Amino acid sequence: MAFDPDLADRMEAALVARGAMPARRRMFGGIALMVNGHMSYGTSNEEMHVRVGPERYAEALARPGARIMDMTGKVMSGWVTVDGPSDLDEDELGGWADLALAFNRTLPPK
Image 1 (tube, one colour):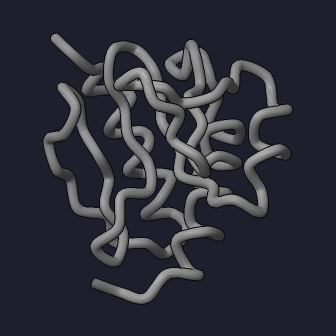
Image 2 (cartoon, rainbow, N blue to C red; image 1 turned 30 degrees about the vertical axis):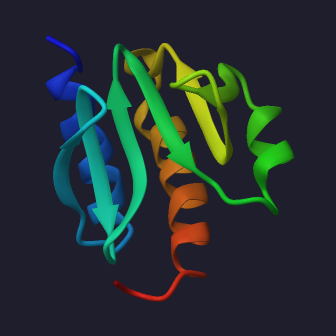
């Protein structure tokens, strides 16, 4: 299994609880949660990936468990990877959802 389905369900629930209507898409060996047609949040290889955008990138990297997202040997600016996301409680997971949605709302719908 390339991703944790329980974590994907919890991540999706965090977005829905904040008024988003995410769509699941298989990507990068895991699940990407699309909001308004944009990748916002995802999970693969027991990691969580969060699109936070350039303005909140440093803030996101300073959070516990966060690191630069580098899936292909190239740093993905505006994205962070969170190690050990299945250990996050609902409030912590929701905090990441808040960051993802804050950036997502700055993008035009696709």
